[in-house]
Length: 204
Length: 74
Image (tube, rainbow over all chains, first blue to last red; front, side, top):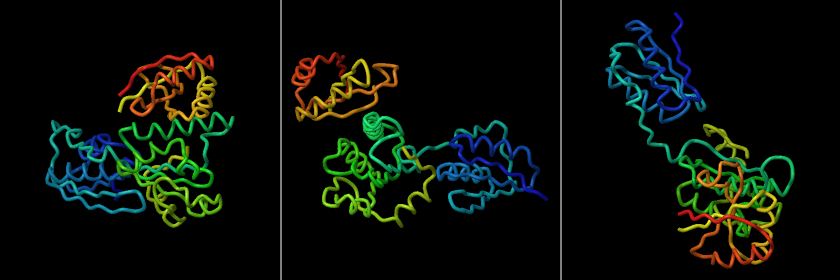
């Protein structure tokens, strides 16, 4: 028998909860449901939602995707509000990484790209969901040096818990190792690990 | 911290202001124009008035024939 599957990848709370509730009402008792989720918060919330209704949840993780399997041994009353189980404790730091590969934003006029990347980085500390890690590569490293026009914003982000990594080879190439103003020098192993484990990667 | 947000007529004026501020060793940040001040997708200059004398900034920019609006933001 094919197991009914709810694909909630890319969906944020309360959507996975609502999808789960709907699917549970559509399967028969003792049938199983598979739920695919790609963020930790929704996994916790959906698990709590099902467990509080007397069901056991089996969780497996492959890459960035969690597979939750639940056997319908309990009943979720129609009146239950799934969105009430939506706790968003991780809202301040979410699972995305910003990888800055040059000292400009976008293609086109150089002076415009230069001003846009400054505005981009200066906006990051103002957002409610700051990235988990910011990575500087190639000419992007110039933005992490002591004389960077966005150094204050990067220091503010680091103090609020954002990890800042700068490519060591790139610092070496541009002979700027001594001038790093924020964060840590890193290598391709760490950088690849951060990129591969991120929920989303933004390349500005 | 208290900031003054300087809003210019165009991105070209913002770039000109940047050059002037840098040449005068005045500390500034470029930020997207806060939504409460303008619906445009524009750029503004942010001055941290706890470290920079805003009157000096105004004088330097006006001397270079730049027009701008000043808004206060915490």
